[in-house]
Length: 272
Image 1 (spheres, rainbow, N blue to C red):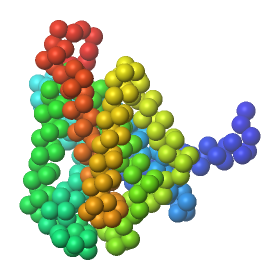
Image 2: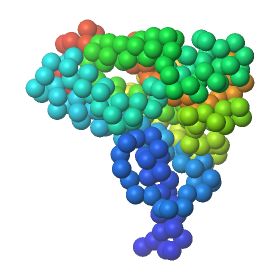
Image 3: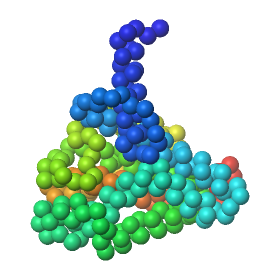
Image 4: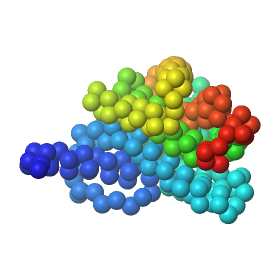
């Protein structure tokens, strides 16, 4: 039996999880009327869990669709559901980053462009490319189910981890897309990393799991360097761009590891 202190802690963690779900998805949840800044920062520990939820939903949609439709249509439907479930939240950040970084010279100019709700040439081109890369990658992989779950979870680990050791750009205070949390504690980072590690080990052998984590660690360092060079820190849009680009890196890594349809066309027991 749980004591009163344990019940309070469990209720607090449940609130944090629901808050993360409410912010990063369109799934309706019931939240307490009062949310504190401390809770907002602690919510970051469950961002990977939200990614896992999104991946599971998209995978389920794919599995149902592929029973009646060609794989290409099933993949497109799963991608469309991802956009609906998340409200294209991260895709919006990806497009804004490319508009800002491509069209601005100073930090202030870049941030002003990123705050603009209109879509520019750089953003439109980047959005087209990222969606096409997702589609082609999922089509090339023998198991879109594994890829969707793994990529949606780990990409949010990479994006959220940037909060831990990067400064939030103060000039971005009026941005239309601000991060839910602007501080990531060591405890929250550990929970975030454990979530990603458990999901990775569930789907991948130990060696491939290790290689993928190394790849993502290096890619995270490149993202941090890019954002620091461009803005001196990160914004909410930067985290969205980090999630989207990390998702592609994970798909490509799986392809390199030999999980493509061509490499495994003679294998059995793998979800098509």
